[in-house]
Image 1 (cartoon, chains in turn cyan, purple):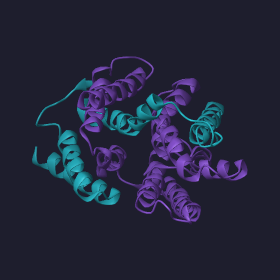
Image 2 (cartoon, chains in turn yellow, purple):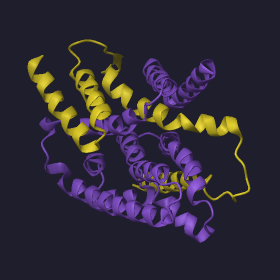
Image 3 (tube, chains in turn brown, yellow):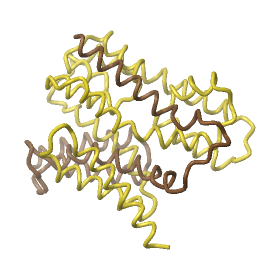
Amino acid sequence: MTSFWLAVLGMGVVTFALRASLWVLPERVRLPEWFRRSLRYVPAAVLTAIYAPELLLRQGAIAIAPDNEKLLAGLVACAVAWHFRLTFVTIAAGLVSLHLFAWLL
Amino acid sequence: MTGVAVAAGGVGPLEALAMSVIVFAGASMLAAMQLFAADAPVALMILTALFINLRFMMYSASLRQHLGGLPLRWKLPLAYMLADNPYALCIARYTDHPDDAHKLEFYIGVSLTVWLVWQLAVLAGALAGAGLPASWRLEFAAPLAFIAISVPLLRDRAMVLAALAAGATVVLAHGLPLRLGLALAAVAGIATGLLAEKRKT
């Protein structure tokens, strides 16, 4: 349990530092152009890298196949997210299609 | 959702709530609990959180343009509450009303509401956690939540290519130890986005 609390404290410090990092800089400080342009791609890149393995890997192996119900449900969720832009609707559509595909396949 | 996952990782509801108040970042908490359940070293859990939460640095830079002129004693608590959904709502609002005199009030209202609802949801999830049947496959709600946040961001070609490159990299690198794939994917995504941008102009 000690390791749990150490991890929680460490994660808390790191996460708070990232949140405050650039906001607390005085207004006269200008960030370099290349840095600001790079930051623009961080959310899309990191968030995609978090969910991609859940859809594309099965038991540690790449599974791009029509019998991978997680991949199919994920694609449905992507379409729903693009169209409706509502978190709850996307999650609901993804979970329903996961069960639907699992039942069909 | 996160509450359910944290409780499933083998800690009690109070620990889950404490974690949620201290860290307040769902994606990194889910990843950390997977690592915790696998007996991974503490440093790896912290490092993974660093990469997952790197996006807050971008939000931080962006909000500075709108709420940069505040004293430090304001900025620090405001930064603590910074999260995906409030950020997206605030930036949409600030873009539509650039001269709004109440940018700060809007940020506080949205962030406090999200913070409070989030903490209650984590507690409820952690309390209910063990009672929900595994056959519902609710764990799949975690990747779905990331899809819900990230897909609407893909509004131009460079952004789409950045996301595709990051996704492909992390999947191809899945054999690498220590979640190195996530770091590589972030770098590959940023590089691809910048290159795609350059080619266009």
